[in-house]
Length: 360
Image (cartoon, rainbow, N blue to C red; front, side, top):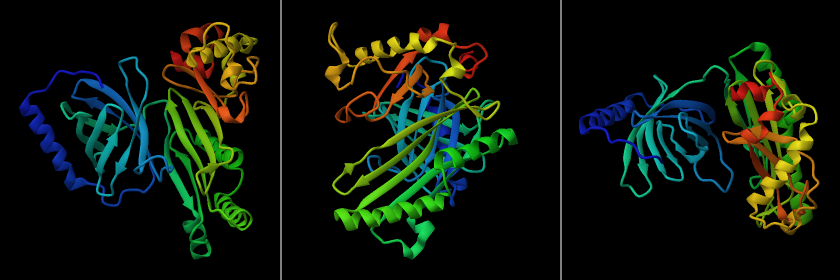
């Protein structure tokens, strides 16, 4: 958290009264699942952009809302958020340096409250409005589990759930194209059928292995800005005893001007991948803090002659490249990811491409 000038006690008092006043407009029947972009300021000085998704969370996270924020006028990375968004509109979001505590006004679509440092010595007011800037797209989150699909027919011990976005607003052709892609290319079949098949797999697994299992299939909005939309799909079966099989992670990026998914060939000039591959190897070596002459093989890599990852997205700091389990490493090394700064990729970016427009 950055240092800011303190505001006067009178101003702080007024803000606190306004915050308390929002209780009268609290969202009593808040949606159980949603996606929001919030923009505003901390202490009336620092503009921030917050992206939140409310949903059931994986077992390693607590609460019912997750996301991130960043300072829009300062070069810095995204800061992760997780916390609780109650039905009465009361919100608590924890982050690395402190927490946001506030209340959601569903009439004015504004979150008002206080940011407090982790040690409790600093406190600054904030006000965040729900706003979807030009170049972004609205979405609602759809959640299904074995209870909503099968009711009492699902064994009580089974646990299968799906979370995915359904886009709305914007250009109808673009929205329809992306929603169709999610259904046909990512989900692959009817969500209710997925739940039923996951439950059946859990029943069969218990008969054979004697262990219970859970199955989480989520499609989350990772990036939604500057006419670029990125989704990350996670397929995660987990077995009793915290044993996991392969976790499948895939990234899908779309041009919001057309609704088309784009690949490496759409954003980099011809022959660029041969130039970018050594940059990725060098960055991995830097990430692993390897000394000169020491091979990535010591970190579980098969070799240093792997291709540029097809799984990628545009982060604040550069292009993020992701390699799944056993794609470039042995199983024990797990998935691998690294980020190549934009200044190192600049000369390889295709003019007029989604990445070129994104960086303008």
